[in-house]
Length: 335
Image: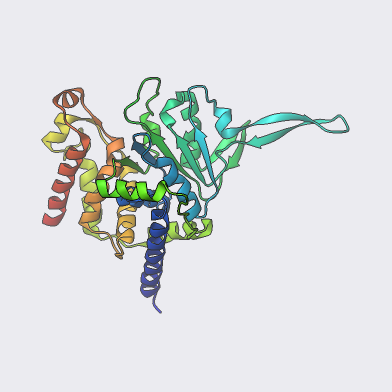
């Protein structure tokens, strides 16, 4: 069997397994297929995600369910204003042995896991938020001058409440850029909410079952990077990301007029991975222009900022990114 045939077979097997994972997640997290797909996208791309939604939308349940389905060791941190970096990373304590000698012993913090839920991350102080920066980017932390590797794989799924901003500390741009995608968790539809009522207010509740292991997820992340991407799709990604930078010569007028700063090269990398995951979750062997348009918002919206004038006019990034994605599609097709 050729290398190409092996790759096709492996991608098809992984796609089937992801469908099984979707079904297991749906046992507990009912509906919201788009939210589930974007969260799985972050995991199989080897990245992190920030979930934005109102209280009671099931964000915590989703992360807990993912920990089970993906076979990952999970921890949860409830971020509060008085949380300190040592509460996340861990600390060294001085111990005295029976013979009277003393030595330091390191106590691991909750960050030493494979799937970390950072609940209401914007409620912690900037000093505590920054404790996650090195962990998210380099998968290790430095404590008392010693580099300590984290779990393998390592993913952060953070949550934020979009309406209650009093006493919060907005995440800095450098940390937002570490998240592969931003996932907006909307209200469920009427039918979905009815299903939730029937499934969660009885005497028994469904349980998710493991589908992946940590090693399976690592293999999936490697396989995803082998998925082929056509030159037209690569050009479309480049056209889109560069068009969203107001200072770029290729930026259209509506970007220059409404956006104060745009996405950097990490956004291009994230979009390249995300469109592969989108195709994989849809049962296809290579990404298409539709995948780029579908993933543009989740990948780019937290890496851009509206100008003051645009906010005053009531503009929003979602519609601006959709418009830019449409133009990038046309440009790539014309080329």
